[in-house]
Image (tube, rainbow, N blue to C red; front, side, top):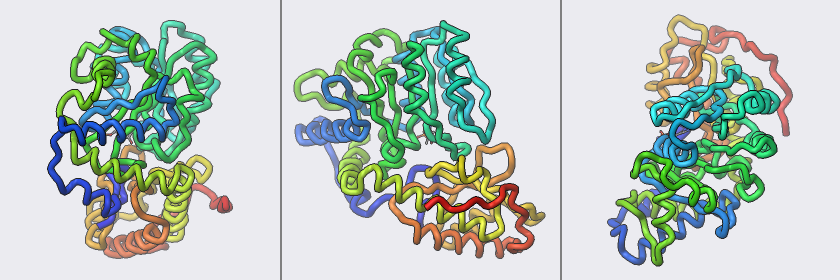
Length: 380
Ligand SMILES: *Cc1c(COP(=O)(O)O)cnc(C)c1O
């Protein structure tokens, strides 16, 4: 079975195999491996060990997003949170529930965040200490230019929290070159191609020192987790998802072999195989080619009376491919992830299976609907 969802992703057999063991989290061998995994994550972020640190948190990505907001935005503090889609909406909700004020900035569902609009919003309201950005909006599939946006925020004296969960390891992000960034949030189970259960925050050491007392939650206090790392022979604070972290060590080895650019190129090839393939089937991708990011593709549901998302998902699963059985777009779509341990040949086979699944539903190329976008030339 190939997972074609935007995380957790299909993993290499060697990554899965690393889980098939019992690990004692406070054993000295595990402590060493734990620190190496954190250092490996920091390297991917291009952090410098003197200035930055990668902190591990057990759990899903949203826990780490909340931890970052709580730790860096003081209670009652205000952050600009551009409404780029479903995952930005979750971030706004996490902030609000944590007693921080997330000030939205309207962004069209199929638009990239306009740097000038962000700058104007920050200039209008000097009480906004932070801006929180989603790098790859999993709801739409659009990637926002986080490095450029972080530079602008820096020029305006503001701090940045990046939800890079679906982007980290594929899209470029150099924390050493972007001093405005307080936190980059990621998980093991997306572009790093590890297993679920471990989240991370890459942060600056000086900002973590200054963040003491902010969180209002011991569990989600990054400043406390950071203090814990400073002890000699430091290990995890509380019980970590040890098998997931052991698997991530293997996934990071494979990552280093492929390199960030190689990984992004493979995902981009997966995305193009899908984008072109569904167009061939007579379906229309939700985004224009220019806006389509490499992580996840939404496709307009066929305009056919027999269309039914769950039946399509089931018919595809019977052929060996799992896609999401929900979407985050206003219009009916289906969504397919392009990330994970597979390449464009497998994506082309998946597209063939999608054609078969559509036929099961009685939908043909002719009845599938007309593309709202003119086909654009392939970018080589
Ligand atoms: C996957 C994802 C998350 C985290 O999801 P969890 O289910 O909490 O792990 C956060 N932000 C984005 C953009 C994501 O794609």
